[in-house]
Length: 194
View 1 (cartoon, rainbow, N blue to C red):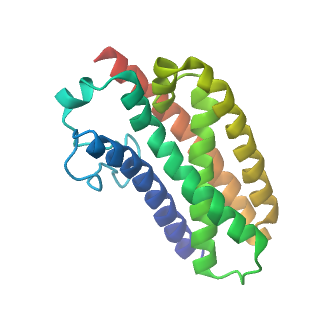
View 2: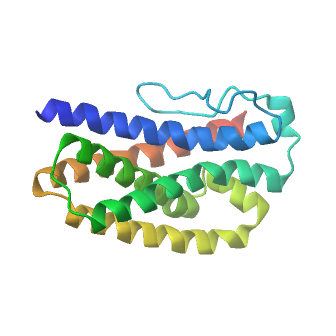
View 3: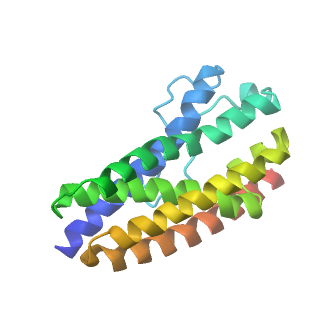
């Protein structure tokens, strides 16, 4: 049964990361830098996911506002899915089925991804938050405060989750935060070097 929960949790996380990249892809497509916004690169090991393929020549011609829109789109997707579904999960009584576990994980992982961008990547400037810095640096402050609100919501979701799920969620979140933080730092460093 633990293996089944692991697979379902992995599927929820994969979908969260895929949707985040599709968020970027939709805006790239709006700016004619991408043909199919749903064709993104998310490997099974999840690291270094990107909205590729993107027409790099057209993307490099985007101004800072458009590039900001591309960058923030993934985070907005995380919030658009994570916040409503988490409130739905927290305000209703559900049996502790595998389907409920999927949706609870889906909401929680969206929030963790958004919070990691809005707080950690905001303080240790990397990845999508660089587009905020390049566009309007003062936006980092309200985005950080939103990130703190999301962290509080994550903690509340952890407390409200069934006891049998708590340890798995805590371990998953720690691994996600460490992996995302390290992955973004490496990815941002590679991008600056290129």
